[in-house]
Length: 115
Image (cartoon, rainbow, N blue to C red):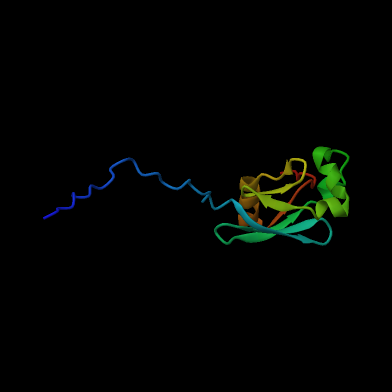
């Protein structure tokens, strides 16, 4: 009578899947709106508007000046939870989330108001 060897469970360390970004402020979707605005949605379902019109037309626009070209602006995408454009231009998703949670809109490049 042949006996089958008992199978032993492999006790080697099991690999856990790589963690996926779960921070609520990570962007899950972005859509281009007229007048240099974006509609963004975050992982937790929060949605709002990002208005970049003042920034892209500002003399202090820096790297954002390239986005004043409507075709370039329309190349927006979500990359690793952030709103970004080709060439390394991106927006800070945590700051965007905080302002959208507070007011529904993040207006970039507007003049600061005096207190």
